[in-house]
Image 1 (spheres, one colour):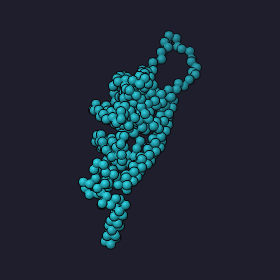
Image 2 (cartoon, helix red, strand yellow):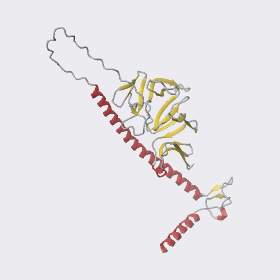
Image 3 (cartoon, one colour):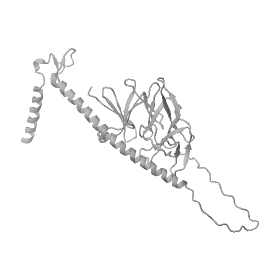
Image 4 (spheres, one colour):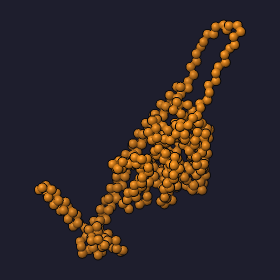
Length: 325
């Protein structure tokens, strides 16, 4: 009991000392202060309490430092993930090449019996396309628009199921398909480019089906990447290109939608200063206690943030956090 009372007294003394460092009661008419009574603050023309201003600035600097630390941690995690994905993909390609090798065998032919016809070799039938087929290609969960320059998709057996000289890069299921990339579709970066109103060009990106048919058929789409399950991020650039930082973790894109390929639902992210700033690398752990899996972060110019999460039912939930500006 004594320890509890001592703790309460210590907290009261700390609060009192903190309040004493702010402006006095007699200055509340001239200064906004967090210790002022309700209704005294936010009056137009009043000055900010120097101690409050310092605390706000310290909080702003701390948030910037925390964000930077989280970004660096995400950068390291994603670089490691990218390296693992590339290694796994190279391994998969090596296995495919090994399966495709033809072993030369020398056979000494005996004399053919008279009157017996020579059997013709049977031509191997092409791979039959079936429904519920995973398109294996480069990792589809990063923002990198180029990838490994693959112009084809493979099935789980390593057979080529869709290939085109029009494809610059392909993205789809990868390795153990941990993010559950949907079946029967893949992401394609085309060789064809779209000219923007500022004169620059960007390669066209779309989602294709088993027959190579484009889903959106919109040449302004410059970026598509997979979040999880049926959710994809669709980026459109009509007037100017994308801004990026450390490659595959961050983008500023003119128009951004989150699209569900199963339900056809579209969530449009509102623009801030003509663009939408999004991240795939950030501190996601604080949402785990709520049973949410954080997938995408969008940041506003005032440092407010929307974090798009998936709940246990696979539904998209948005969490808002306030910035310091």
